[in-house]
Image (cartoon, rainbow, N blue to C red; front, side):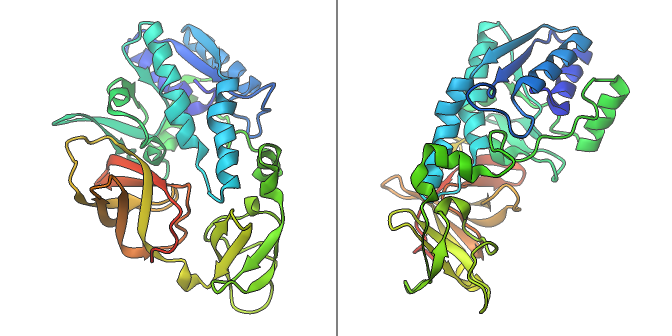
Length: 350
């Protein structure tokens, strides 16, 4: 229970079904890392307690602030320092929520762990499968690809078949204390003035200015620190005049920002690292599927290829723009999530 409307409605739905419900809240922000977006800090813990009291269910607060800093925040900063664009929500789900919380659920003797994610767990011929939520505007399956099958067996997503307006309407009808609470925005540990300052505290070199160069290596100007940029970005380059230029690469080794025309953004070949796979029965060396390269993008068709040396890469049918190292590339078959991995640095592949 995060203190938001989604997890609160999840608890209410379970209680309504006659289940024995226990609320668990993870304290991730507070002393070490003040909350920036109204998520995972003191006010949210109080809201979660209010909802638990309203529903008359037990409520436990678990302090994982140090683990959150070590396993999510520091790797996030380190990835930016390496010229990547990380997605910390995926790592938070994988390393904290669905590892530590599942262990806590076991310690409490719980049969399952339910969350407010907009995704679906459906039973297939080979066991439980992860699917998109039915509301495409709220689907969060992209952020859950790094689960392991054993975790999926014990997880439940009661909101996966609902739209957000239905969830809010249910919360209002029930009179939940958080029915009108706004959704949290952006990354919970990033302050209002942006993530660059936070990353700079852990990785000061990421704030070091450097050269902006074109694809041929010609110097066009100066950037204000690689942490301020991501692949596909157009605004904020400070070059002025001439045709529009876009960020093509963040070269952390040289400290250079490589830019070029929009036509140079498209990529069909993507190298993946750290592949997670939720469909062990689908182990083909060449697999036609759909691929989502960012959470805001629709899946596009392509082929997943597993090499004999265990290397994995994706060949898209058509080029995609904004393929950024550090972001996830998630593999879908219809609405089902087969798995995914992180996009590796290999911009030389067209």
